[in-house]
Length: 254
Ligand code: F6R
Image (cartoon, rainbow, N blue to C red; front, side):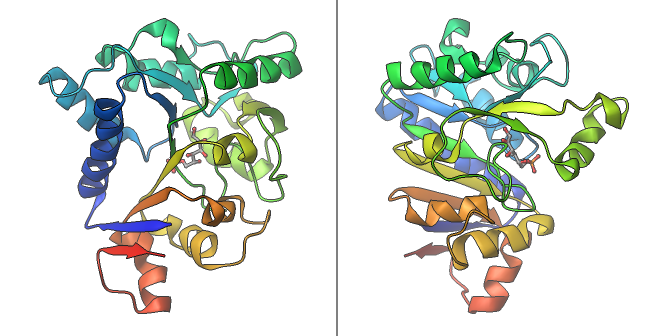
């Protein structure tokens, strides 16, 4: 794992956008695994800016998103499809038919998971998977205790995840109870992984994930075993790592 320190969220976003645009420049038909949530928004904004200045071209790129709520259509504001369209896809020149998000309205969710796995396989796998991290170490909707060996699957959301995502809905009971998520195995099969962490509320998840034991109790800890994983974190998110290891540099490579 390579850990890169960023002074603040703006620095983190710029460094992340650099890695993503380098991927697309080196391989224009790159398959990008993308995430929703607050953390990648700054990187998406930076990529949009560079795209609009003519520096990065997404016309041959393909994207596969990590997850989607079950029961929401892509037209609903809380869906991850809507989030991606609004915050990224509609501002760049990626072809819409090359942006994949699990179908939250699939009548047969299990069949949708199988279809999604087939899509990823058919694309030849993911070149670069972008990840955020939950305060409890979750990645995608893989909560603590999730099996490491799963590909895309249906999950029942925990009460704590539903509570923390309730801020995006009018009332807590509108938060879907289930979601479709890429599993840890799908994530681990990506050729490169880029995980972003910003803010003090991610400090213990980052410490436990990258400096503790590899355990399903901390889903992101499996990333210690990935052979091309880069983590970019801002100083508040790094606070526990700095304190517990005495590490002072900007890049940590193990
Ligand atoms: C998003 C996702 C989640 C988030 C995580 C962090 O597609 O799968 O695992 O990456 O919950 O969310 P933020 O960035 O909002 O703190």
